[in-house]
Amino acid sequence: MDRIFRRPGGPRPPERPTLEPIRIYARGIEVAGWVTPAGERVTDLLQRGTELTFLPDGAKPDDPDSWMSLIAESVLFVVPPPHVSAPEKRLHRQTQRVRLQVGDYTLYGTAHLRPGFEQDLMLRATQPFLPLTDATVVSERGEVRHDVLIVNLSEVEELAEA
Image (cartoon, rainbow, N blue to C red; front, side, top):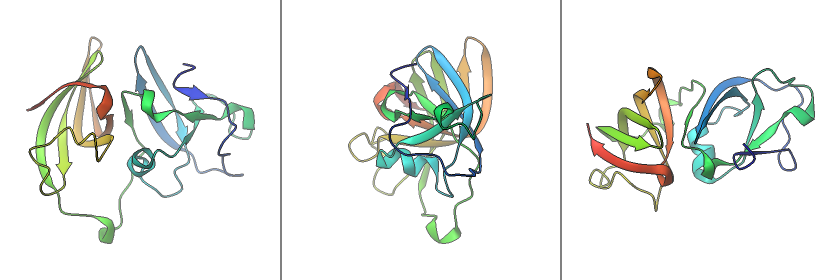
């Protein structure tokens, strides 16, 4: 876990944080916990490379030493908290059903692509993380459906239309 999280030293959580659920998948581990995105989409935070302050499930939110910083580049994918964007921030995007192989997981979902990028699903140069809606995670433990997944494109081993 040392390569995925680190102890605080950077951003501190707010005094009275509004905690929202998050699930983080990395090679060999799956971690549940809480974030304080302050009204922003987790996708936007990850795309900017902003450190994501994270509270592991069961830790005390008022103990500053309980909080960790998520090192985004080392995760496979994230199940973010629910978020409804303001209508003026929503952009029309082309949708495409995709299947991705990421580590030991097969992911199915709908990618929302900017016009002109329909043929370049891997967008790695312009977008390190790809959000998928109406998504399913398939692993040796079975299938789990999520409204949204945010996938680290540098960890995708295979991508195809579904």
